[in-house]
Image (cartoon, rainbow over all chains, first blue to last red; front, side, top):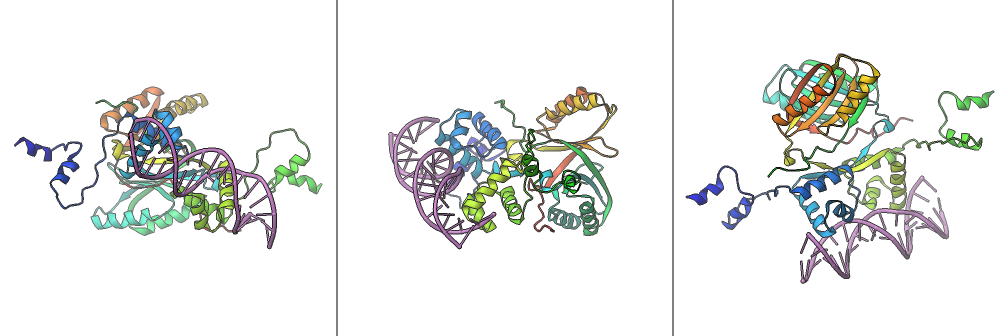
Length: 189
Length: 189
DNA sequence: GGTGAAAATTTCGAAGG
DNA sequence: CCTTCGAAATTTTCACC
């Protein structure tokens, strides 16, 4: 019965291929191969500068263009790379205020959460929105032009669904802000 | 004396040209022209997808390639567009934990702030780091692989400089997370 | 993983409304 | 400031080893 162990617990890296060989007629998402050191390097580079040419990225990670390009394609297909975006200077477009908002809810039902999540997600001022463990139920990072705009946002927030408590903390100075995730340079095998 | 009013209070849009005509031998940074509706559209598009071709962006904002390209060049030169980056899926690279950390400092001197800011900025786990107004002095958003990694970070943090209070709040679910700033579609003249 | 080459884009300059 | 028309340089993309 050892063969069956392939289908339990930790699936082997290429379990999808195994399943495909059985002609199962279900949609099998391509599992992403474990990222090796070069993939991680590519991600580190692209997280800092996505305007580089494939050849330049290849140079930096020690690969020629084609294999580098293929890895990038795979990382995108696997959803490891979500998208490429331009980062804009908040102050240069007049969005001077960042606010961290802590929310405590009065209602913990699924229906309430659904309504709250949809309402808050739809607000463009909300750049991050997490459900939390502990004393605070939700945490938001909000960006607005000025206090008047924040007041508009605040009223929108508290009128969307019933809330027990809302605490707004205003940022005076942005000391660090990055989009690059801390990818460990070396991976223990 | 009306001429002198040009050099006081709200400077006119092209004050740098005015100063240049006086042959002042100082470095005068090119002021960025106020962003018009098309510039804002370009920024909105590029904040969502920086992999589009200039021609495609031009189509979406109602411009042919050349002027669209020139505007993008200018937005980059002016620093409105900071850079282009790839966004990576946090979970796909094993970084499962997001933590919001509130810090109260015991020391409010410049020297302390400098040391603290440098130490925290150097930590790759810290993705955002703000100095706050009010009860909390600093707010951090930290990303780590697991609790053990968070413990390592936490010990690093509290041993870097003396702190009065540190509160860690753990995220259970990321409901929304965007890098696109909320650029108002229409601007009042 | 590498080479090479076709196809597509980028990057500008020029002429004109 | 926009449009269209090039056209060279660069990059992307892919067939093949």
